[in-house]
Every structure is written in C-alpha cells, then in structure tokens.
Length: 379
Image (cartoon, rainbow, N blue to C red; front, side, top):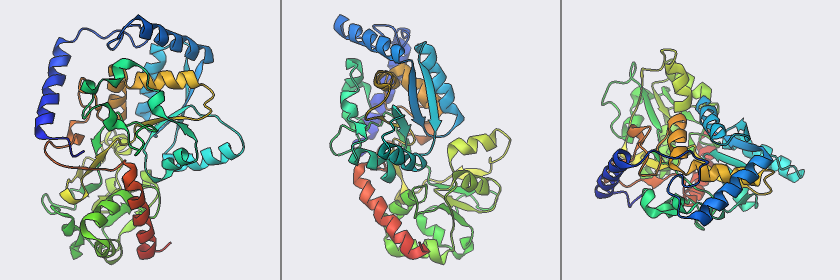
C-alpha cells in the first residue's frame, strides 16, 4: 500500500473518469471482444472456455455470507446461460475445517471461493488444496498494469505472487462508536480507549479466535506494544464474542459504547434497512488503519469438479463488468481504474501508508496476537 500516493490517486481518479465518459458501451461478458479483446486467437480460447464451462453446467462457489452475493451471482448466471451456481455462504474460518475434513475423506465438492484471507485460509495453500491463480487468470486484457491500481501484480497477497488474488481494496472498519453514548471527538486516538469512562463498555471480536478481533489487536500491538493490549483487554474489562451477528446487534442496540472488530457492515445493512443502527459511526484512527482485499479475495480449489466453470468465473470477476457487479453487491471497491468505487468512504486516503491486512507477512503477526490474547484473556 506504500505506493498509493496523492499523485497516483489523482491520476487514477482522472483516468477512471475519462474512461467512463469516453469508453464505448461494454459488450456482454460472454461476447468475443468484450473488455478489450487482443485478437482472434484469444477470442477463440475464450469461447472454448465458455463452451467447456457450459458443458459442466454448474459452479460450486463459496462466498462470504451476505444477501448481496446471491444478487451478484445472478448476474454471472445471466451472462452465461446454462451454468448454475451452487453457492455456499460461509466465513472462511467456518468453512476451512469442513473443507479439511472432506479433503481427508477424498471428497472434493468446491470449485472456487471468494472470502477473507488471513490465518485460517492460508492453510489451504500450505496443504496443497488450491491451484496457483496466476495460471488461472488467462484473459490478456486482465493482465494490463494500466487497468489496476498499483499494477496487476499488486493483487497477489502471497510472497510467491501466484496463489490468491485481491482485485478489490478497502480500508478496514475496525473501530466503531455508538453516538448515543460517545460524543463526537471523544475517540481521537487509540489512547482514548483506555479512559476509565469506557471500562466495561468496549466490545471486541474475540482476539483469540479467527474473527474480527485479532486484526485490530495486531495493529494495536504493533503500534503500542503488548502492555497496551493488557490495559485494553483486561483492565478495561472488554467483552468478547465470536458471533458476528451478535457483535453487530449488541452495538446496534446500545449494549456497548465502543466496538473494536465488532461491527460487520453486511450485517449492519440488515439493521439499517429496519431503521436501526443509524446511531453507529465508524472512527478512523491512525494506529489501527490498514487496508486489504476484505471479504472478496478469490482463489480456486485443487481437484475442482468444475474447473472450467471456476476458471470462467474468476476471469469474469476481474473484468470491468464483473468488478462493477461484485463491488456493488459486495459493498467494496474495485482496484480496476475504470470501475467507480462502490464504497468511496472505504477507499484508502491519498498520501497515507497502510499495512496490507491481507498480506501473508501479517499471518505470523496475527498468530502472535492470538497467543498473547490467550495469555491475557485466558484460553
């Protein structure tokens, strides 16, 4: 994220605006020449892939939970009639144990997945359970550095730059306040969290588990040290939960004043649709600011039962159409420069450096935070 400067932001914003204004109408996703075809040979290969995927007839896709993903999937199905998507909506931390058990039993049911990429999903690569996505992304127009913020290769999260791909970008929403209980400006820095006023009034995702708590905990530890975590988690008597819906609802209903890794936007949207949760506000503080691919990082499983459908989906996802659809319904922002941000408030601020919360370099840091959390909070 260090390369994301004010100059690059202005340049890419202008480029996106000019491209949107001047580009011809996009061809349908399944049409040869769509999204900037580079020649008849490539068009032929693309049509062959579509035909092979339709012959398979289905795609077993795992997504992050949320109603918007089903709507995005419907657009893919409409673009490629004859392919039915069997969606499994599960958090990665809940899915991976199931996947591991099935794999040990010789069962291979899934083709591709879009979700968060942190401690748990990485084991799928380490166990040889996914294929290098670099060899899956074959449309030449998708490999153009000029299309992507920071260039195409910036989307690879692993040190080998080949296993998983982040085509979306967003700032993490780790810190929220209930404005009925916290006045504007009361939380300006993370040190304000240690105010005795908030003792027993802070809710966090359980930092010992694979949930929302270990990431802000890691950012706090790297910025302030282990002693800060002790003062926050133990001395301030934080409350913990591993249930994303419960965390979000507790904040919406005013049971806690401050939430760290405790509000999930896709769940919050369900409450705001009912007129609830409008009292919640995200607070940005420098010490825990990070950015990454969020809930929409994509990879393909080894021994996928429908490999052509998986390959077709992943390539479609990276097209302008796919990115526009997925960012809209998944409430995120594309790294493509020709796609307008669906969540402008979650775009990285020009000129600021952000830790990439999804980088494999962060995995050992997350694990260390969880170990510290077990020592502070108890196992």
